[in-house]
Image 1 (cartoon, helix red, strand yellow):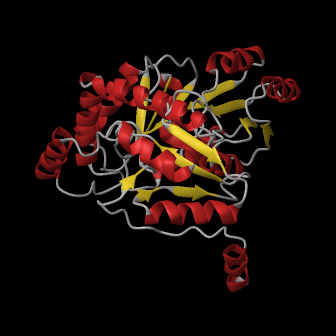
Image 2 (cartoon, rainbow, N blue to C red):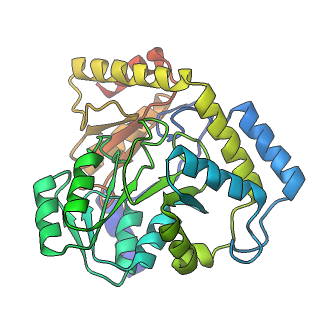
Length: 348
């Protein structure tokens, strides 16, 4: 049975290949949008953290794996997001599956929400319902039929690159007495921190260039999640040195504002050049995620290999991750306009 399924994937060009990232390739697949992960201050903070606390945390957060840098990082994020409290998870996947499982309520979600949100809904022991992507009328219809649910959406969708109007979703959540959750994985550090919601979930491996995830909300909600979130309670905590590095990355993001300005300029440049070249972008929104529709898994995989041979690290995204095959491009601060021109020439 295992061999049969693998063979089906190979025959239909659905197999995910592991490629080793190499320095000679121009990487257009990284989510390190502001190129902070390699910053000298972040490296130094990680090294100093290891010197102070060693490697490894020793236990889960509620046993003996919770340290001063972790608390400082949580408090700092709560302040930035204007929330009462925050908690630090090992990953965005841990956060999404844990929060939805712990709250144990019916769930209404955007159809294109990340796999971790879908898996969290499955673990919640409650029914979940998916509205057509960014279709507020459909979302409202589902909420009308089941008020007092969880309404959850990403702010920037990871495979589309489009921005969702969270204010309109908040209005629907309030109208139907529902708990509103926003996954801001790809929005934090790129868009303004002006989300109003009951909970914000921020995986930190994108613009921050870090590790782990933050969940922020009211003190009541966070106190509850600390007691009933299985992915938090039963996982060994990340090393405190990671929080030292995350704090340093946050400081770099706040003071080196040129990084975001350059990135946004590069996004506008890419959109212009892509449109001139006749490439079919899924979204024109000013986000680092620039997906190009291919529609055929075989062609998408062939294009990935072609780009690789021309010096570009770019991944094809196919089923089941997405329903429409595509090339997903991530723009980062370390790219140049010349890099973009060369990539679009190869694509066109």
